[in-house]
Amino acid sequence: MFFRFGIEARSRAAGRLIGRVRRELLKAITEEKRAGLSQQELARRLESERSNINRQLSGEAEITLRSLADLAWALGREITFELRRPDSAAGQNIAPQNIAPTTSTIGYQPVRIIAPKTSND
Picture 1 (cartoon, one colour):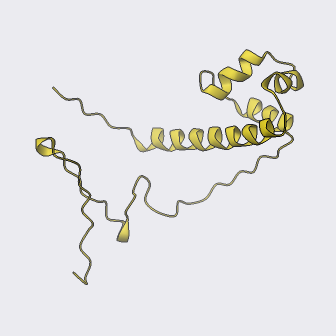
Picture 2: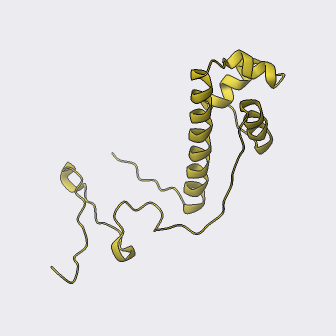
């Protein structure tokens, strides 16, 4: 038995954004921890419980734009934001001429990525 499922482009884009935001936030917190900031002190600055901060940082609780702004403020950081067109096709590791690579798992063989032929081949 096997299961096949897909994630539509909208959910994929949202997941990538949430992942980038969370990575940047954790990176900033790690830098501040090295400088001596504890999660307890962060919670004190935000007038919140440490457990609430911990749940947000671990991904167990949603981070709203307001809570993200509050965390940035408590860390002494500024948030920058940019909406731009993607540089390449979303989800493609190899995208010459925007052609998706071919993969195969038939017969439980290892997945192979076959680069598209170019005019030089």
